[in-house]
Amino acid sequence: MSADTILDLLVIGGGVNGAGVARDAVGRGLKVALIEGGDLGGATSSASTKLIHGGLRYLEFYEFALVRKALAEREVILKAAPHISWPMPFLLPHEPHLRPAWLIRAGLFLYDNLAQRHEVPGSSTVQLRKDAAGPAFDRHLTKAFRYWDGWIDDARLVVLNARDARARGATIVTRDPVTTTRRTDFGWEVTTASGRTFATRQLLNCAGPWAEKVARELMGVNDAPRLSLVQGGHIVTRKVNRTADAWMLQQPDGRIIFVIPYEGDYSLIGTTETPVDEPGAKALTQAEESYLLEAVNRSLAKPLTTDDIVHRFAGVRPLVLEEGKALRETTRDWKLVPHDGAAAMTVIGGKITTYRLLAEAVLKQLFPATKPWTKGAVLPGGDIPRTRATAQADFESWLIDLKARHQLYDPAIVQRMARLYGTETETLLDRGLGANLGGLFEAELQHMREQEWATTAEDVLWRRTKMGLHLDAKAKTRVATFFGERAAVSA
Ligand SMILES: Cc1cc2nc3c(=O)[nH]c(=O)nc-3n(C[C@H](O)[C@H](O)[C@H](O)COP(=O)(O)OP(=O)(O)OC[C@H]3O[C@@H](n4cnc5c(N)ncnc54)[C@H](O)[C@@H]3O)c2cc1C
Image (cartoon, rainbow, N blue to C red; front, side, top):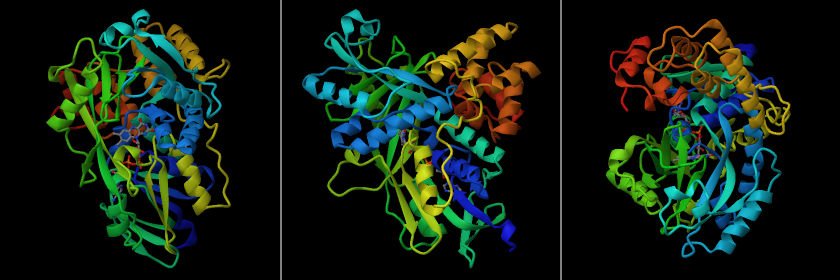
C-alpha cells in the first residue's frame, strides 16, 4: 500500500454527524472517505423534529452548557443555510398546574440571554384570546409565551454537507455498507459490501443507532459503548397551526410535544419516546399514534382523529444511559469514545443543531494540528448576497428578486425550488425545467440524481424533498419510473 493511497480518515455512516465530519476534515486538507450503507441521511438524520434549537426543556435538567452551545450554533446554521433553515416562533401555552408562570419566565429569560442572538427575536407573553393563533386552542388556554427557535430540513442538511465534502475532494460512497475492517500497521483496512477496499490511518464510527454494533462486531474493539435505543415517532396531519407559530405543548407526564407548521398544508406532531431493541426504526404503533393524538387534542379547539393523519415516520436515538435518570432526562449531548490504542473513535448522539461543533470536537482529538474553518462558511446554495440585518431577510429579498427575474414561472414553483436548492435554483431555471411530472420537474430529478446521490423515488419524495406529501399516486409513479422502478412509493 503506497502512502498516497492511504486515507487520513474514513467515516462509517452518512448521517448528519458523518457528513459533517467528512466536510470539515477534507476542508482541513485531509484525505477523506465517507461510506454510507443506505441513502445519505436515510436513518435518524431525516426523522428528527427538524428544530435548530437550544432545547428550552433541557434547562429543567440543568443542561446549561448544552443549551448555550446549541443556542450559539443556531445562529451559525441559520446563516450557513438560509434556504433550508429559518427562524420559527413557538407558542408555549400556560398550564399553571403543570409549570408555574415564574418558572417559565425565568427559563425564557435564560433562553433569550444565554448566547448572543442576531438571527431570532426574543420572547414575549401572549393573550391567546387577542392573538391570531388563539382560535386554534381550547377555551381553557388563555395565556401563552412566545419564544423563537429555528427550523431546518434535516435530510437536505446531510446532503449539502456531503456535497461540500465531495466538492473539496472527499470520496462519498452510498448504498454500500462497510462489512469488514482489519487492523494494519498503518491503521485500518476497510471493505464494503460491493468489495471496495480502503486503507485509512484513522477510522471514525458515526453509525448512529448502529454505533455499538459497528464498534463491537465490525471494528472488533473491546471498549465499545453500550447504548440504549429510543424510538421517536411523528405524525403529519391536516394543518392545525393557524399562524406561523409552532407550539410546544406540556404534557401531564412531564414530556412536551411539538406541533409544527409543515410543508404549507400540514402540521408535524412529535415525538413519542419508546425504548426499542433494534437500531432500525419501526412503523409507529397504534399506542404511539394515540399518545400523540391525545397529547395534542388536550390543547385543540377542534380535535384531530386518526383520519387526519396523512403520514407517519420514526427515528431511533442512541443514548448513553445515565444511572438513575429517566429517558427524558438523559443528556442529548454527544459522547466521543476514542478506542484505546486503535486509531479509531466512536461518536454517539448529539443533535442536528450541534453536528458542526461535534465535527470540530472529533477533529480536535484526531487531528490536533489541523484548524477549524466551518464556522461562517456557507453550505451549497446558501451563498445569498448579504446586505441586511439577518440571513433570512437576505433570503427573502433575494427570493423577491429571483421571482421578478423569472416571471415565466409560477412564483410558487420558484419559491418551492428556492427553499430546496437556494442559489442553485438560478441555474436550474436558466437551463429550463423540462417535463412536469405532476409537481416535480425532470430537471430537478436529474439534479438530485447527478448532484445529490438520489437513486430511488423514496430518496426524492421523502428526503431530498417532502413532495411525497403533495404528489398524487400517478405523479409518484412517474418519479419511480424516472429511477427505473416499477412500483409507486408508499405514503
Ligand atoms: C425522534 C427524534 C427527533 C429529533 N429531533 C431533533 C431536533 O429537532 N433537533 C435536533 O437538533 N436534533 C434532533 N434529534 C437528534 C438528531 O436527529 C440526531 O442527533 C442525529 O440525526 C444523529 O445523526 P447521526 O449521523 O449520528 O446518525 P444517523 O443519522 O442515524 O446516521 C447513521 C448512519 O450510519 C449508517 N450505517 C450504519 N451501519 C453502517 C455500516 N456498516 N456501513 C455504512 N453505514 C452504516 C446508517 O445507514 C445511517 O445512515 C432527534 C432525534 C430523534 C430520534
